[in-house]
Length: 159
Length: 185
Image 1 (cartoon, rainbow over the protein chains, first blue to last red):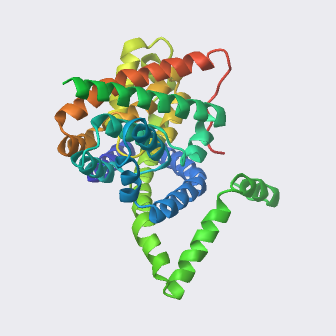
Image 2 (cartoon, chains in turn cyan, green):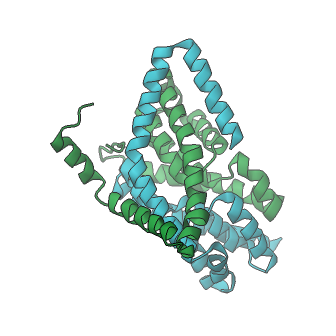
């Protein structure tokens, strides 16, 4: 996180030295975009945090950790698609899951859907891509995640 | 910008699904603190704050970078590298750009729009978004630490081609439709 602040600060400084006028107009453009997205963003964050408060990550993960076979894959994909968990929390939890016996294929499927399929963030995505393309992208990503999880499972079973 | 009444009304109209949720939540949290309702306080301080924190830390930086990018990088210059016919080089640039960026997927959308505005091909836009599923460099050490090097590398090796393929499919599906990306108005 700090590195992002440093990079942003440096870019801003360089830009400001190079051309004040241009920098200000860039900042204004960025700020306007941010403000226009803010209400939708806040709504999504509120809905996500309320959902995640009542169903904590650990409960979510055990819900597919205990399932075996196809059902395990399916619930991992669904949980990954609807939830929004930052990497610094999802990776340690996934590590714990693996220690408790959940296969790498299921974990790969979970991580991929977690990152690439965002049911909760559809309102944000649709503002940029439109609803139709958003649904297409999420649907294809869901299938892609299943493919990745399946191949991972096969590779780990063979080696 | 001038704010006259009809303009405000149409502006509000656009957020008609957003503001009720925000007001309801704000009211609920406010009352929770007033009457010392611990569930409400905990909800605000734990889960909400965690997401809000990410949002107010990463997004303003992202939008500053987007704004600067917008004024400094001319379309003609970028189009050559990531536009139609940019081929393998364009793909490589998109992969690189996505893996060095921190944050969740929704952070990618505003930037994707900027790239689109600067002449990126649709396929490269979807590659950029798709690469958010691959390991991000800031997160890679985390993944390796908790799930092992073999798992992380395999996932990376599989993820990159699968999501590039998805980008090709999306491009193909949208080829004959005069598809345009939009920005929130």
